Image (cartoon, rainbow, N blue to C red; front, side, top):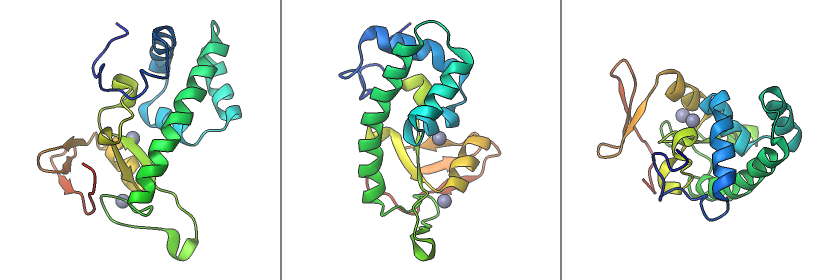
Length: 165
Ligand SMILES: [Zn+2]
Ligand SMILES: [Zn+2]
């Protein structure tokens, strides 16, 4: 169904038609969640075209347009959150701005974006690349009440910085 889990709360409904949502959802099942997050946050048009050409044959132009729309909106939200945290990881607090002079934090979706299409700030946590990989590899689930990530082995890791969850 187009109206899957999380419908009504996603922030993309107002910019996407039902047809675009259906097209997007039926195609992203080919992409791993973290790759999808990377695609909507960091990928160039070329990256998107290359990825989509691997598996999409019908309606690919519409799918690319849908990706571009999602990316445009998602970048605004992510940029807003990264600035709130001054480009620091919410778990470990690390900020690579000093001494490297670059920002490498990433947005992670608490309810997987591929399922929820929820790109509201309340569904996003800002993580360093290492914690982002650990959260995915360790199948960590965010406990909203305790504000901890619980990994599949039972380890619980609290947020060091939290201003919006
Ligand atoms: Zn971290
Ligand atoms: Zn993620």
